[in-house]
Image (tube, rainbow, N blue to C red; front, side):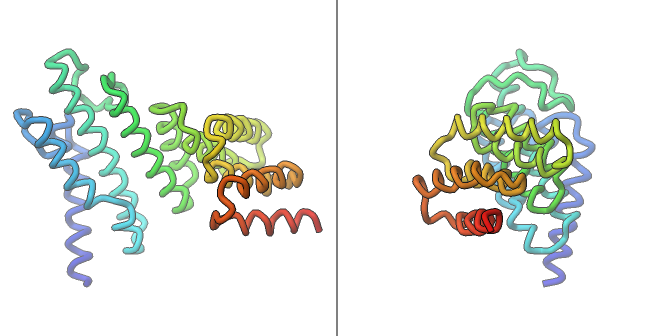
Length: 235
């Protein structure tokens, strides 16, 4: 088992060092500029399966998990950039370090990047790094500003990061309201909204949120916790 972990660590550090020094998306993917889009996507999928967060979280090495997530984000950006460069045949911007500044041609690319940043943002939130979580969730919203769950997580992290600051509280409230309006039938959006109201000790708003969750998903695993918080505020 120790040998396996050491081998995983060696692979991660080698990829991390290589990607850190890469100057274009093809180098990030360890691919030739002559490869076809299908070949690049197959290469990315192999990397992506290896660098999923759940594969590393159970190893208990936070630094290794962080590096794996950074690698996966770089690979995700690289496959999108490389695909656009091939499609554009020279019309895309230079494949330098500014991956986020490239012009995406396909809506699917925008959605894919939004999902990538959302998943990693949630992972960093679970790791307790709210600053990095907020950066990643902000990028998720940038790529898909109409996705309610991304807005909800951004709002919750904004509050969690600076709950003592009135401007941050107002920003968080606005993001959660926007998320609720966009995704009125997503219980996870309202769970995050409920957690915000519970921490703000807004009993009436929390009660209304719980009632809404009960109407759309009465079996949600987080509902009991919100109900207990409401009872605590009521007592």
